[in-house]
Amino acid sequence: MGACLGVLSMNAKLAWFLLGALSASVFWVIVAIGLNERLMQVFYGFSGH
Amino acid sequence: MSRRGRNVHIRFLASIVLFALNFAFVGCASTDRLPPVPLAMASKVNVDIPDARFYPDTDGQRMAALGVQSYKRALAAHHGKLPTAYFLAISGGGDDGAFGAGLLNGWSARGDRPKFDLVTGVSTGALSAPFAYLGAEYDAKLKQVYTDTSAGDIFSKRSLIAAVANDAMTDTTPLRNIIASFVDDAMIQRIAEEYGKGRLLLIMTTNLDQGRSVIWNIGAIAVSQFPGKRDLIIDILRASAAIPGLFPPVMLDVSIDGQRYQEMHVDGGAVAQAFLYPPTLNLKANSARYGIQRKRVAYIIRNGRLYRPEEDVKRQTLSIATQAISTMTATSGVNDTYRMYVTTKRDGVGFNLAYIDSDFTVPYKGPFDQGYMRSLFEYGYDNGKAGYRWHKTPPGYQE
Image 1 (cartoon, each protein chain N blue to C red):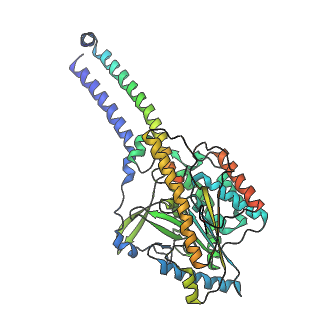
Image 2 (image 1 turned 30 degrees about the vertical axis):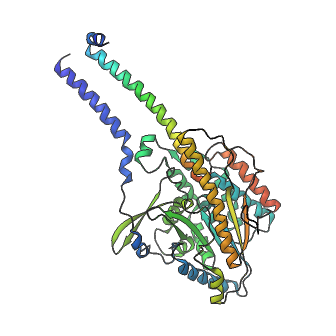
Image 3 (image 1 turned 90 degrees about the vertical axis):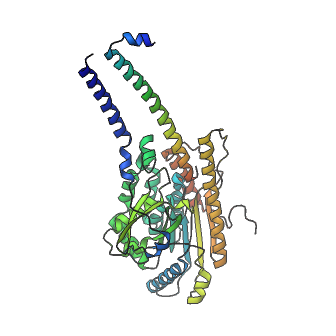
C-alpha cells in the first residue's frame, strides 16, 4: 500500500484524501441525522409521548 | 510537486477544515447568558408589573391577597350575590392539547360551558388557556391552532452539532410566530377587560436555575402600562411550552438594585402537568377570614392518557431513556390530579377530571402529526358535545 501510494503524484494523493474525507463525512452525516431523530424522540418524551 | 504547490494544497486543506469547524460551531455564539438570580435574592427581582408573578412554594399569602382582590372586582362588576365560581385547569401534553381544544369546542356547542372565573395552563395548556379564558368567541381560533398546524409550523430542526452546541434540538421561531399571530392587541385588551371583572388567567413556567415553578398572572400584565407587555406574554406562553432539550428555553432579563440578571424559563410541566392554585393557598380559611361565601367548582383537562401505552421497549440506551421519560411525565400527570384533589377537598371545591381514555385508538405517528391531532380534536369535540362524564376522583382513588 505504502509503495503504491509512493508512486502516486501529489495531486492523486490529495484526490484520494479528499475522497476518503468525503466518504467519512457522508457516513457521519448519516449517523448524525439518525442520532438527531432519536434524541428528539427522547426529549419529546417530556410531553408524555 | 514544488514546495510552493504543496503549500497551496496545505492552505487549501486548512481552509476547508476551518470552514467546516466554523460551520459546525456557529450555534455556540448564542448560548451566552447573564448570571442567574441567586435563590436568596429571588424575592427582590423587579418585574415592573404589580402582581405579575408568584412562586407557588412561598407566595401563598400573596396569592390569597390576589384572590380577595379578584373577588372584590367580581363583586363590583356583578352587582349582587355572585354565582358559582368555575375553575379550569388545562394540562400539558404536546400535541395531545388537541383533546382539550376539542372538548372545549364541543362543550360550547352543547351550550352549557360555564364562563370560567379562573383558567390555568401549563405547556400546551398554556397555549389553549387564553382562548378558554375568553370563551366561545375564541373557539374557532383554538380549533385552528390544533387542527391546522403540523410539526413544521411549530419548530425547525437543528443539526446535531448545532443542537448539542446550542440550547435545544430545535428552533421554535415558527411557534413564536403562531403565538404572536393570536396574542394581538385585541386579545390583550379583552384579557385586561376580563381581569377587571375579577377573572384570572394564570400560566405556569419553570425557572430552571432555581428548579421551581412560577405562576404568571397574565391579566395583571395585560392591564398594566408596561410597554413590552405583549412580548412578555408571548415569551411566557412560549416558555411554558418549551419542552426542555427539544425547544429552546426563554431567557428573561431582570434586575436587582440595578444589577442585571437573566432567568432561564422552560416548560411548566417540568414541575407540574397541571395546577389550579398552589396548596400554600388555603381557599377555605381565606374565605372564612374575609367572609367570602361562594360555591366553587373545578374542571381539570388532562391532555394525555393516564398511563403511557404499552410498548415493546428495545434494550437500547435511547429507547429506554425515551420510554422512562415518557412514563415519568404521564405518571406526573396522575400525581398532579391527586395534589389538586387534596386541595379541592380541603377547600370544598367540586372536582371534575377529563382525560384521553382507552376508547381513543388512533395510532401516534410522531410529534404534531396533523392527522393525529385532527382525530384527537374530533374525539374531544364529540365527548364535549355529548356531555363529558367527568371523573369525580383521581384515577385509582377509592373513597
